[in-house]
Amino acid sequence: MKKTTNLVWGGRFEYDSSDILKRINNSISFDYNLAHQDIKLNKQYAKSLFKAKILSMNELKKINAALDDIQQEVKKKKFKFSDDFEDIHMNIEMALRKRVGRLAGKLHTGKSRNDQVATDVKLWTKEKIKNVIDKIKKIQKTIIKKSESNLNVIMPGFTHSQNAQPILYSHYLLSFFEMFERDKKRAKQLLENINECPLGSGALAGTNFYEIDRKALAKNLGFKKPTENSLDSVSDRDFVIEFLSLLSILSMHFSRISEDFIIWSGSAYEFLKFPDNLCTGSSIMPQKKNPDAAELVRSKCGRIYSSLLNLLIIQKGLPSGYSKDLQEDKEPLFDAFRTIDLLLDIVNEMIDSVTINKIKMYDLSKKGHMTATDLADWIVKKTNYTFREAHNITGKIVLIAEKKKKELSELTLQEFKLVEPKISKDIFNYVSLENSVSSKNSYGGTNINQVLKAIKRAKKKI
Ligand code: ARG
Image (cartoon, rainbow, N blue to C red; front, side, top):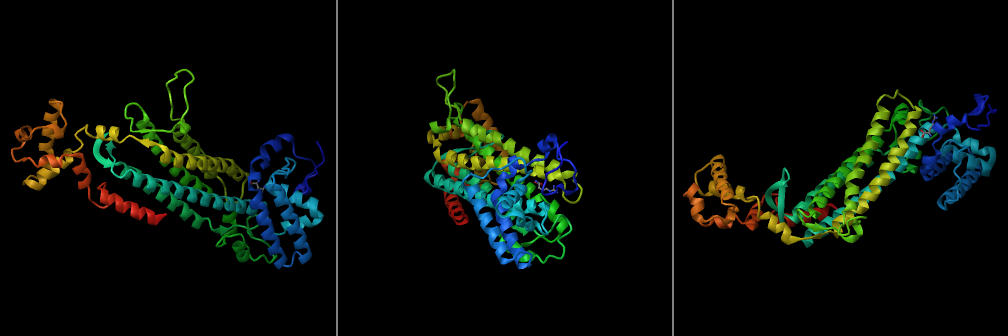
């Protein structure tokens, strides 16, 4: 065993950490990601220490210059993150020590890595939430653009994967606008929840007599206010869980639109085509063009869920206060963000670049008696039947059509009358696809004017 050389916490130790401890304990291989946040935090903390008269003006200047220098090195990717120093906080502190000597040791006055890491992770997450919001907006803009340029395209709307009622393709696209709008709202809400600064909470109990102005410190770091309880501050990672939850829901939406597009690009539907640049070929079947990008979006959702689950499991049994388990929040968090960031770009490109086959969509819409509800509604409107009775009559007409291998609109007036003599010839206007779509005139329905209004509202939201 080697005598300890640890400058940060080695005092009460006789011997150095074993290699095996370093392997499980060191986090620099991933928390180097927090370098900018850690430097930013240290700079603001130095300012607080100056105001609290712990650092002189001269010392503050020296520390600031050294931190600027470190920041430049990190930016230029010249900073050497070393495994000799456990984590990002120690790496930065050691780099500072190299530049300003023992003065570096003053910067940790009243500060613990526990409040420091919680603050770093919050700063990082805040930034990434904003990235997510910006990219969601970009997708929403693409949806609006595509909804406007495909306004008259009729397609089957499905329930249970079966033709149900005709809708406009724009209406379909706008349904995802709404899902992404809620994702965006969740993200904005989290920006509010996350807006309290843990720094100045110390290890768990608060800081001693050093007069750190936590309110000013929080403001300087871009937070609304300081956290209310020091013990909560160092153990709280529920904001990470919240972030991963919203990313999970967002990726679920991505997975669903991908699934629609994948199925619709297949030979069974041929509703749409992916461009070459989002597909790959087969090494054996020369004719193949596979929608790999969309398939990977669909599956990477699982990866994001697993990060969420990971964090939920890590935190479920933790006692109050900081435990090293909390170090394990970072890899799932970083991985989930890296993944969603890629998905946000791909989904945008996917929606923007698929080409729609209106004819195939229309042709399939003619199948499955999708205007049967309109027929039932006509009966209700023109006779004394209740909707339940009209439903039953219409069912019988559908049965006849099935037996004759015809669609509803292909039946003759006599065939309609065979089931219900009150049916007159204006029924043919009612059971057309166009009429079915335009009669869905309720707020939020698929009637074209409603869709235009929805587009107007959507534009206001972004
Ligand atoms: N690397 C640690 C983490 O990510 C920093 C906090 C360490 N605190 C401690 N008491 N050992 O959680």
